[in-house]
Image 1 (tube, rainbow, N blue to C red):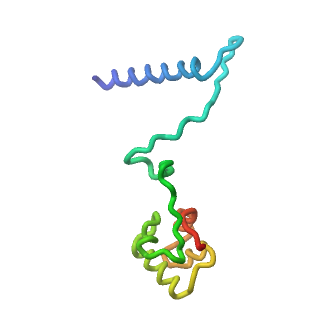
Image 2: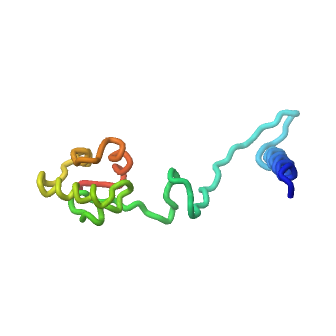
Image 3: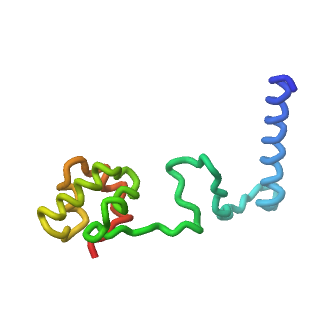
Length: 125
């Protein structure tokens, strides 16, 4: 199929989807078109999904206790590799338990951006 034929087919499909939206999702009354908006189902997660996509519903988020986790467990956090995990453990051993999660930013290499990316996955309790 030639490139221009693919473009024509794509445009035709878009027109069909647009028109069917009025017939299936909207209603006609007095010559005015009213569209009903409904929540779409959750997206299908596949390999190679966007990095900004939420985890699939069947995957529960694991919360890591930064006061009791091993370096290997800490390294599982997104953006925390083995080097930062070892620094967290060393900081904890030197300074005692973290009282609040924000203290994690006292560890060299963990700034506000990295902290914000993992703060929903850590606890001190």
